[in-house]
Length: 390
Image (cartoon, rainbow, N blue to C red; front, side, top):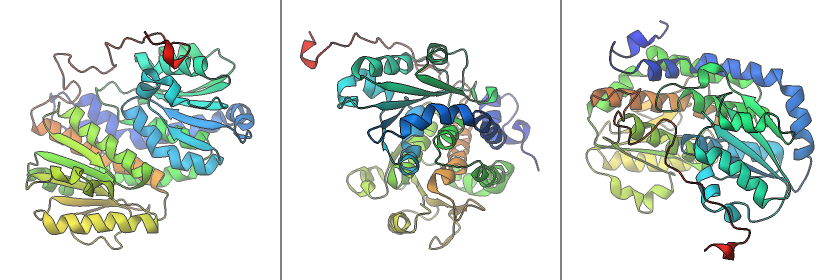
């Protein structure tokens, strides 16, 4: 059965945009593939000479969800390009540009931005140009009218890669914008081919069509007061960070959500656990890394009430129990591909938790204390040297 907003959320629940933007993702991913393929020649002409420079540093940047996109793709981009690749948020760049760019080396700044209108988005690119002698920009954005797109569209040292119009989410939380920009960066930088989209899209369609509904319902029926997301390596740890943020945003902070790496969780963050805590473990497809995910999974299942610890995985090997959520057809996929349908699970958990709290997901902060596009940021002039700060 094809999923529609009508059979995903109740009419009048204030979730139309968010639900539609979650459901549409598989189709939007195919559009992203077509866009990147159509711009392949111009992307290669722009990126080829940059990546050929062995001294190039690639910096993946954004704020909030957009920053987590950089975390998810960092390792895959580094492998594909053979160049030093770091994920540095725009908020860190704006707060301390000199620390964010400690070496004056040729730099490709890859900016992720849904609207491109948040103060830090534009400021980060300008600060990079102020601090570095040579910087080029790959701007991946969902809004052609945003400040970031307009600033860089006529810049010969920049390439603006626009996402499909549908990816410019109108709901409060970033859903299809996150996965679209993540996918676009992997395709543009040669870390993925368009052939990988089919498997990710099929798995996501299985989820949105109700393939995991009973699992999600069972988890939320426990009425957790805290939810923890865990994942190993920068890829799945970044996914865990985004998953926790979605739940926090869409429930208006009514549910406490946190994230950590599978190994890092034991070093203090495990203190969050109680009998009302639910834990979601993203299990890596990498055979070695997977062992650590399975270790923490077994440990948590032994110590927490039955049904409160779930695994999201593409392979059932070593992951027994009804609390295992399978992503079909992706047992051999890279973790970056796995992240695309896996985050759909987290988006649905957040959406249904929001509705269960009586919150309207399209606008969980009606009084405006948190905004769809960040407000209230003053970007202060950067001194020429660190000791020039008054």
